[in-house]
Length: 174
Length: 331
Image (cartoon, rainbow over all chains, first blue to last red; front, side, top):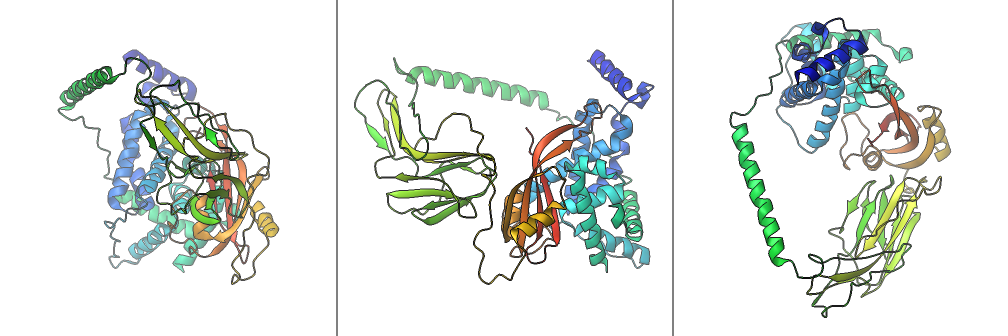
């Protein structure tokens, strides 16, 4: 097992130019991205528990497939690809389940906080695919190409979703 | 996208994102815990499984007849195009002891079209792409004889056959052998195979290629109260602006959004996302065969191409683009 592990690390280093084993992806490198995963999950799912489950599940799947990640610098896009796959799968499974545990936050009186809540609520009101495209591209910062890969759709579809997403957000936030 | 940038809105989205990340800073995935008794539990499951297998083998050895196969078996070799299917009985044995009626109707819709089933001219059910029901439960069927038809949404008859009383039956013999007969029909389209049968299911051969264009579904009869809308050609022209130039037209269908989205977006009927049009809002759904570039997260694997379907939904009255869907099922 140790020998195979060494070979795997060597393959990672060989293909991505990683200089040392310290650069290879580890549980810690996944854990470092966990806040990003949970933040995205909270915007994608309508339920706090589902968001936590999604982020946790993503990390577990990532750990199982860690050896397939050859370029550690792309770990964020890789993790979000796993997360989007799981999010759509969860959504299909939970489509008929009405969740009630999501309680919208209330503004604490500060204008900035109210603004954040308003925009976040507007994002959550977008359809799932549109919301996913907006979150991944405009919030997480993935490129259109990376967003398309993460969502498993074409770049043209992503562009369409983004265009309409911004338009609907403007309408909601008016 | 660059033409539709909105820096102010994007800044607001970024502010929300920063707040969300700050709120999630403390989140750390839990390491996968191993149940303390996992080993014991696995061993117990192994023992139970072994006992079960030994028991099943023992039962089979006790009840196995001295000659012939175990349990009833059939050798139905069905034909297509509504020709009655008659199975060849196995070698002669004792007289039959029982004859059972087979389920009334079954369907395997391996096409990408939604299919409606008609019996004696009355619609008895709708079956989305990929539907399989053997038998179809809950059908309200008239007395035999039946004229069974499968139609597309625009009323085109894809297949039909006639079933008379006594055509569907199965016979069991005490020695475990038997025979079955039934009727059914099959059509191979360019978008997949459709089987409808009564009795034993239709078997081989492998699906044929179909005919190009045989899966294009046109506009059905519209309700008279519907306001004037854009034509099918206009809808296709508008939709074409939202897809890559190398796609091939598959279907252009007008109808209520709720109905169409269930078929094209592979979701249960009536399940709409917030912000989507109302279920009874009329739209055009234009579907195209497309090739998707799939790029796995692993950069070493490289990208590959996979066929799929992309659907553009536009407003029936105004032609305004509403949404697009891409679907590329895995191999």
